[in-house]
Figure 1 (cartoon, rainbow, N blue to C red):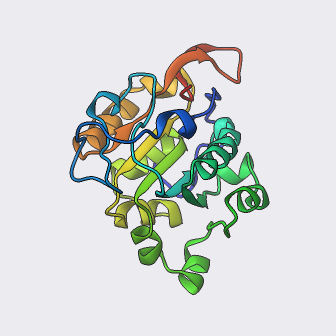
Figure 2: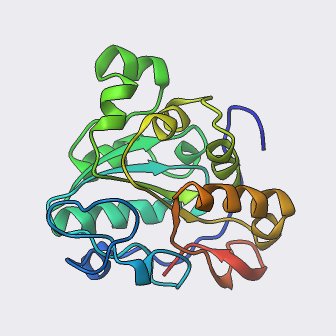
Figure 3: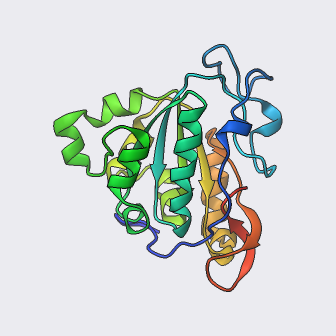
Amino acid sequence: AAGGGDDRACHGAGAEIRPDAELLPGGGACGAGTRHGSALRDDACDDDGRGPRAIGGGMKILLVVSGSVAAFKALLFVRLARAAGHEVQAILTQGGARFVTREALAAITGRPVHEDLWAAEESIGHIPLARWPDAVLVAPASANMLARMAHGMTTDLASTVLLATRAPVWVAPAMNPAMWEHPATVANVALLRARGVRFAGPVEGAMAEPESGAGRFIE
């Protein structure tokens, strides 16, 4: 999983993460601190099939879209998040751009989409971008992206920002069941969880290819 690109055919398309239903106020602490008067609820922190609940309205969310056929679901997430009163900026990886366009993400976020590390340095810079959000969501998260996050590889803008951010990080994996169950991915997930990264899914279900199992983008 080393190298600079995302998985070019990391499947696992499922239903969307629904911020209108799952970004709920209040609840017990999950990790350090609260945001906007609300806390992440510990009963919805990991793979319970419900995804990240619970931070009050008015959040700034940095969305990282990596290479998976489920990437088109990110567009619906953005629409629902903005309707719920949240601001969203997007980083689109090289692999993610195989499945959704920069223009579509820009139109739905109402902001420029960040793709290239050096172009970002000329405009906003990766450190200000890393400091901007209240939370970071990697959705979908490919096996390659999980590997680079686990091993601190800064091979592009997305991985550099993820290493530099101090905001809570959530990931919504989407990939073929064999990739999700591979010992390398299992080890990477364990490393990320130990460092405080929160997982929303994946869930079991049909894949884009004629297979089924754990790896589908969360409902």
